[in-house]
Length: 130
Image (cartoon, rainbow, N blue to C red; front, side, top):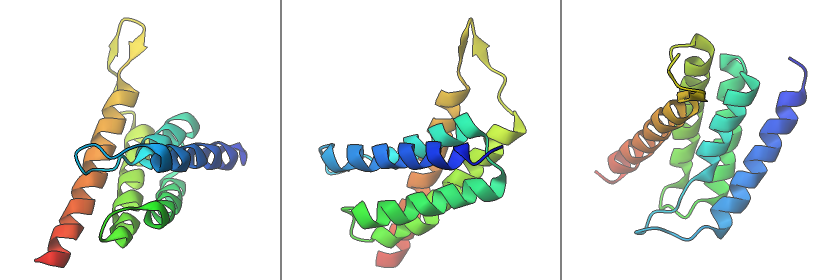
């Protein structure tokens, strides 16, 4: 693959930052649009596992700088882990689920990745205050 994936990923992460900054909190929880954007970048570009980790690391740094959480550095753990698993899922072709002409793969991948990222973030958050 050419270096086109860097441009696509950069643009999507920039859009994620803008959405994160302008989105209101819902029930005290701020939405992390970066997860959706790096999942979309991984689904579109199909990077290697190392590149997926790099995308997650960059997203974690961006999320740490724009976070409203008490422990923003937990993003440095949750985003790279979730992006790596997202790249693993996309490259392994585990999901071949289609309902008519609509593929359910993006929805499944984004749901699992969000669950992993959020679970890792809150686990790290909980252990720091235990």
